[in-house]
Length: 348
Image (cartoon, rainbow, N blue to C red; front, side, top):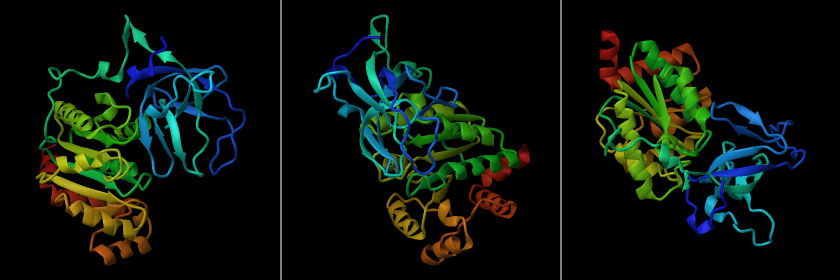
């Protein structure tokens, strides 16, 4: 571990931080009395103890409902003297400086910068662990297989839950190889572990191609997305279930995901939203990418009132996906829109 000049820092660098114990957390909705916690490489949450040291990665986050932070804003060296301070801006070892925090978001953990991780005199970065282009050939377009794409109007509107239901439904239909991935967002293993719990045969996200989050320049993300498509294709999927984190207009590069699926021949699009007015706006926005919404789910579809309002305002079908009947109807919809799924399930 060596201190590194700020001019040589970059997103995806592995750095060491020493946890700063801040005493009891202030009260907030859903507070945990045990204190700050971090997601471990297994996906389990572990609460910090005084003196704990964490290896994380430099990155940025732009969460509308929680916290915004940026690794470039870390002040190193500290202009006031003393140690350089970093924030864990997603609870999973994403180091940056918090720049905007929701009043509803719990106090985040702070760390003293202890240096960068070096191996044999060379800085260790997330990109060091990405398969080469020889091992995994990047694809300029998504694999040409039946694909369920889950997009949303914001974070925390039901996308991951909806993707899990879709995965489980496909496996119960007898689809052999379901590959699930999260395409945009900030690195958090729990999301894709949920896909695995639902029955996905392979799971992956942007972390697997060297990104701590997808708040990166467009050209960089485009290259990484092509690599991720190549990883999906290498698993020989029968069906893809893909989640685009946050919403397409945010800084996570969701627009590039929509561009990649322009005129995809075997696509079923689920929009998750928190209210009917957001559905109306998202419908108009997605039409600019020649993407039609096949089904509306998420928070807005939890009750009959929400479902009826969405349909009356937009003409789009809705589903709560929280009952045997609604899931059976969902299965019929995807087999009608993507008939090759039904054909393959009969073969299996």
